[in-house]
Image (cartoon, rainbow over all chains, first blue to last red; front, side):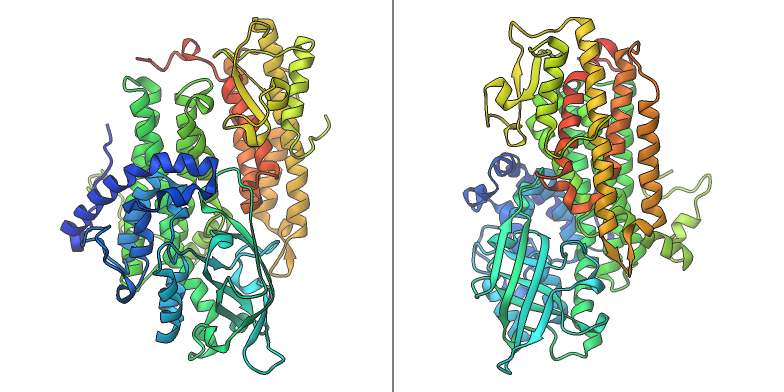
Length: 409
Length: 194
């Protein structure tokens, strides 16, 4: 009978064990807040004292801006690696994915800032997101366009006054957009891929409009629609303006998506694991075909967890394989859906009525499909990897009877 | 069969209750009634309230004989089918309006294949009335329709999560199936409950 595989990185095993233990404990406190957010997404303010709600801000903030106020133990890293962050993301989502996404902090924008911003820009942005509680957004996706970075239409035009820029356009499905103080907006200054810019905005400036969208699930994320109506952008808010055009806006978007894609997979695996645990807790005597289905789900989880760990390590080593990242994200999102469907079935008639937590995650997990790119986009990515003979690893090519790999026979 | 209007699942469910019971409600095997919050007189209450639905314990006037339950179950499957037909049409329209890399999304073979799979599943589901089928068969049909709906929701991306879009109706159809169509433990020989 499969057990959940431990998650200890070879390179820093001891500390990762301590981190995982801490995340597991902290995430336990998120179940009740998660239910409250499902009823009222603005209820996040009632739970800002929880250590688990502090994790995102601390771990995604560069070390020089991190504030050590004893809410978190000293071994929880600021400026986390991808491997550290996916570990946190998995356990936080195990607690509650909505509460995780509702937590204050720089969110995806941190990677863009770390990749493109000069010191003054980092001071401007992280100086604000370090204030507690402050939310930030990452605005790439547009209505009718999705998240195709090269096709975005939000415009950045020269300010007629001759100083700086003017931002016009709309963004869609932006987490915490209507509640953020600052954000990063991707927009088009000129045609072509090198005409894309990333700019920092202050939501208190004239021309910023936002509304929270009513969602079926994952309501804590307060997904929003944003409109920029002649919003003035000072020249110093264009990220990477000291860099060549080929290494500015588009590169920031791609780096952010690549770095965060594994964390969406981690969210999905966390909820999938939670669904399996929930079934076993509710039905401790589950046996036969039903038990076999749960065991199979756990086995799939462990395998994807291993793959997720591998792609995160590749990202941290500076040699990411985008094709494998796509594959893990797509499969993890599907697994989360499968796990909640399975749980609803195994817990019997009216399980979605009788188990409010299950009904909530049943709705929540569908968002993982399109966060950081839809499954079909990632399938195309995997196919590109196959064409280039760059999808399978040496381990994949060496599957034969008698080979024993970690946890896999 | 006509297609459903977005957001109309609660009223369609009420109509099905009324049609099967001559104006009353059908009780689920697990002892509850799922209908619009308005019809049940509990407007806005409970977890399903924001979707216009409510689930209440069975009352004395609710029908729960086998013949009524079977007719209601077939009606639920027809209703789920109707919602899926509407969502399929809606998905084709939306994807047709989206342009990527200079061409309509509908030009992508993967999307064409997904939409064709949905259409074929719906046609197969509608081909032969299954009035003599038992609960296990109806439950299997519901699960197939649920999987079919999930394909459409994936194609719709973020839009599928909007409470005012087709995702809400498909979710409610899944909940209704979970309440009324799922066989209980006495029908599930492979599971052994505590």
